[in-house]
Amino acid sequence: MELQANKIYTVKETAEILSIRRETLLKLIYAKDLEASKLGRLWRIKGSNIDRFLDNTSNIKNDHVVTGDSMTKSTLEKQKINRVILKVF
Picture 1 (cartoon, rainbow, N blue to C red):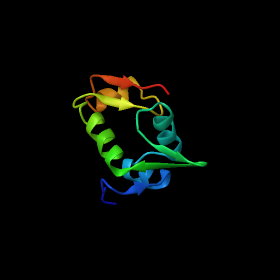
Picture 2 (picture 1 turned 60 degrees about the horizontal axis):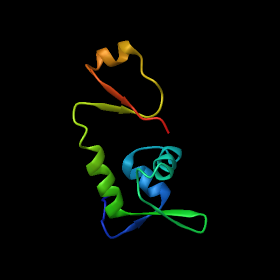
Picture 3 (picture 1 turned 60 degrees about the vertical axis):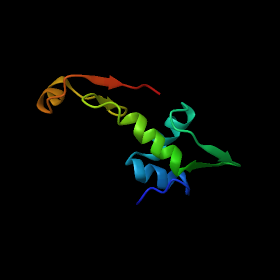
Picture 4 (picture 1 turned 90 degrees about the vertical axis):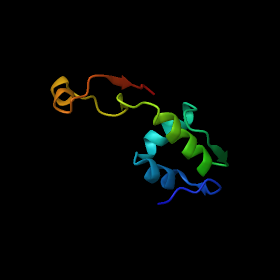
């Protein structure tokens, strides 16, 4: 799916764009890491906000962000990852 700055995306569409689970996306929204608007019970995300979020997260170059399952030391060593940034929601 191509990201359009002026388009308004649903939670499902945004999760697909970011390749994350819906629950993880909602955690990002509640933590105010990704700007979104709530219309009634539904969240909507502007394409420009998704783009800004991607720009902010791409500033982490050689570091790897782990948000889900923990990774073992041997897994990190195999992938030659020296530093992990753990973000707890």
